[in-house]
Length: 91
Image (spheres, helix red, strand yellow):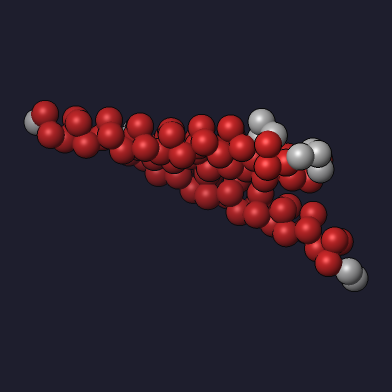
């Protein structure tokens, strides 16, 4: 087995891990109804989509639109944390 054959396997394992982490946060959201957990679940599913695009082998990946999914995931986490802290400060 050569190294290029391991790349799709690693991307698939990473995508599966991100998807499972998203389900983990979704379970906490269903119990607590805290929007922060829902935002984390959504962010990890966006990261799952970003990793899945690596399996498609898009040319010029560093300049591709797929990295916008990663940026959106990180922005979703940052905005959710800021909203949570703003609510806590206003109490």
